Length: 416
Image (cartoon, rainbow, N blue to C red; front, side):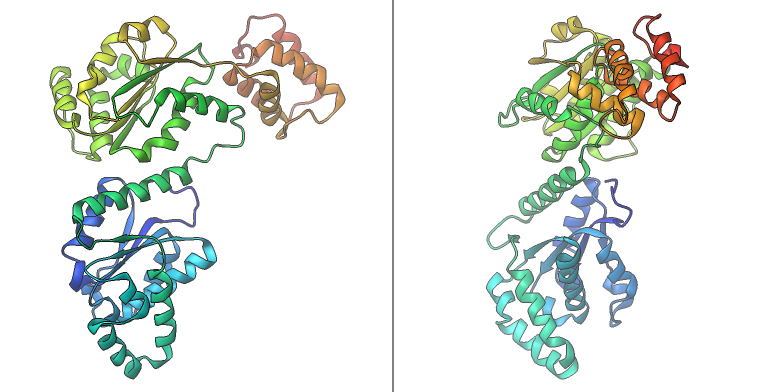
């Protein structure tokens, strides 16, 4: 997943004892994270066995949004694991890094209190060799084991791994889906879309977003996608379908759909018919989120999401189009009609683009702004284009441009 902050290089740092879980639980966990597109740092202690934790490993901890600490029987015997844990707890307190403990074949209370055969034996040796570190190690174990996480006692590993990946994915989606400050009015529209999605129902639902060019259909779909995609087993956003279809046909779109959902770059489809079979056969048991953006033909929908039974229970398909009749023919469950911005939203968006603030800077611009808003009719694309064009221009240039607007239909191309 793409990182929003330059300081984040990894999504997750995985802290574990290799001889206990490196070839089983942790290996499977890292594979599942990778399958979901989550970037994990996993230190291979076999490469530097017996050496202290390098500065690069400490640096990687600080460059991770989350840490997963896998406690196991021999965990406390590793000075490396304990040094990493101290640094993880330091990052949690100083930068807000989120830490999840996982208890693999150990009791959480034994970890907190460092009791039981394995912990007591480990710390007897540590008190001989690392007396200066013992207190901080004990404190880190106590604090980390008190956090909310997962206890694998009497549970299936595969199910716990799915829960961990889902939680990380959900939290990453929330962190990466912050709405840009110039998307005025988007929250109310996303809330309305969420009602259409009805995520609490476990059927397969198709929602259409309908509206004229420039009204923000794609933007609404993108924000919804960013916010909820972590709740699905896989997701795909196919943008500008009409344009891609006209230039390349349907096969590349089918390949992209399967590749993104399965996180597999090696998908190869030879023709549309085989693509239909591949989508239906490989995704029929997966809960997926699929956005089909800019659709203008029924055959595009039939080749990419021809039937609800192509996808698993709980799947959601969002279609954006300018053709309401197409949605009716496709038999969508709900149609969301994208609305133009109201006056306040339009003014804030236009002023943000034209002045880099939410209102006109001087009285003489107020009337000119109102004339532009009347011309743009609340269309976000028109407001953005007009505001960007007028940014930094003199009052004389503003008046000339607005005068030209009054002489042409609603279009921003005439200003170029």
